[in-house]
Image (cartoon, rainbow, N blue to C red):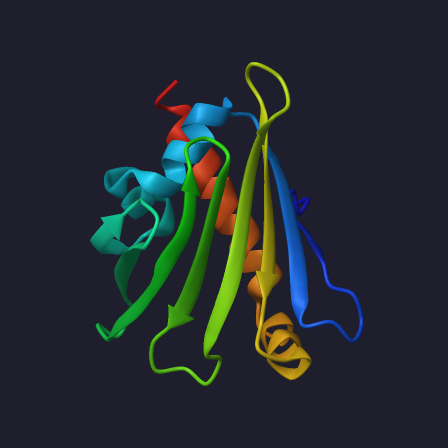
Length: 154
C-alpha cells in the first residue's frame, strides 16, 4: 500500500517535515485536529482536555492492548483557524522529551487540502530513534483513518 503521508528527514538535522494531501476540504481537515469527538475517532484516543487557543493545551490518553494507560499532552502556542497550529507534544513516561510541532493547513482545491507538519526534536539522536520505530507506517495509518473518518462528515 502506498504511503500517502510523506516524511522528509535530512541527515544531521533534528527535524522532520511531514506532508499529506487529503481528499477533504480545508475546514474538515482542520476540524479533525480541533473537535474532540473527531480527534477521538481517528486517533483512537480519549480526549481529556482540548483548549484550542493561544496558551491553550491538550491532554489525551490511550490504552494499549494490555490495558495500560498512556498519556500525551502539550501546550498550544499559536492557533489560527483553518491555517496553523503551533504546539508542543510530549508522550508521558518515554525518553523522548518534548517536541515542537508547526502544523500548516492549506486548501488545494474546494475539495482537497494539504497538511504540512514541521516537527523539531531536542536532538538528532532522538529524531533518529523515532524514525527507527514504525513511525512512518503509524502516521500514514493515522492519516488514512483521519481521511476515512472525516470524509463521512462531508
